[in-house]
Image 1 (tube, rainbow, N blue to C red):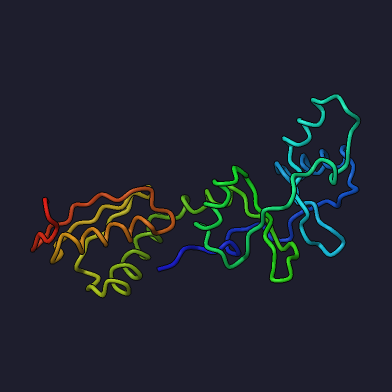
Image 2 (cartoon, rainbow, N blue to C red):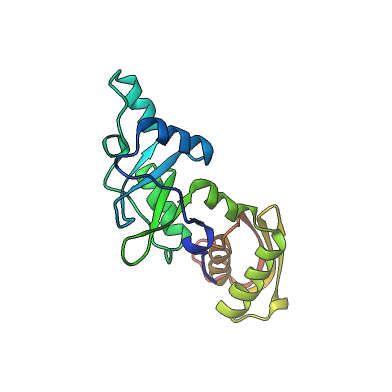
Length: 201
């Protein structure tokens, strides 16, 4: 069982600008590529910062002359690595309150961009794919149960577990593992227990 990586979901060969890119050109690129922000890179294609629609609006609101990417950008650039799990990337985006992360290789060079819309794709996974991952990776490989031991139904990303497991504590582990599978929006526990090993239950 594993989470998808940033490399699997990012948009590769992302459009970028350099510090000297003019205000109007930034606005044109944002519109042409239908994105809300662009990485600003140096001559070695290493991200220096990010310039967003919000940066353009904020600058114009001050009434000053149009600037360049280098004067408008938010820096330093907050970046992700291709081998990060999407969970790690999502947490970084949430903490920093950003919608996009430039993705860099081991040399710090831009190789793509991960956006919130890319992360949403996880929740568009087919129910059948989610069910197969739970049965094969969670139930069989991780917990070493027979595939037929637990019935797994998935509808619109919601998982329903039924069947009998030996202990309630084991059942709780099963639920938590299922809930961590990419694309799962909730888990309904209809499991029965041969033994109740949790105090107060």
